[in-house]
Length: 188
Image (tube, rainbow, N blue to C red; front, side, top):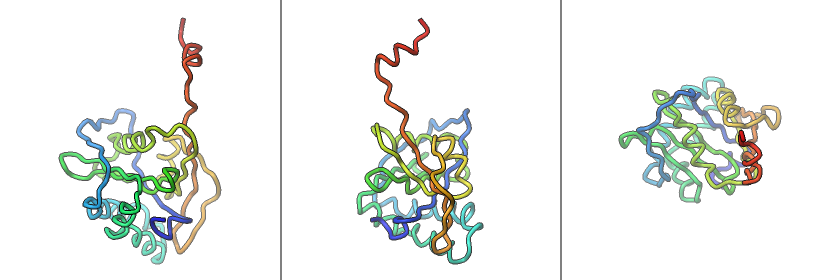
């Protein structure tokens, strides 16, 4: 497993995305170990700004210890399905799935690029090809609304471990639409 905290807690922050977003300058690609430093800087800065102010000193230290360049590199080396979003060669978003693509580990977008559809683009790319099965996330308080807009629903009460607090949520892919079902939806 990527890190021991991932067994029971993974916190994520994601931006609110407007319906009139424009992410036309964004390139999404698989992350490489060479991205670990930039990913760590992005998720660490956002965590310090939006997540850790709600935490005790222990919780903040625990969360941030799992966001170091070394921790990110280890996850990538262990085969995490991780994507990055870039604009003009600058990392502006990062997202990753673990546990055989069944748990959302990260979904972060740079503060100055929030509301531009980057989080939704990363999510869409992460879930491409997933036709069945649930995806879980342990959300931070500030990300709950975003995850709900993606289709996640609460799957239990919030919990705490080592000062890290999370709200468990689950996402189910939309049912596959058969050609016969699509015909029944036509306006003829």
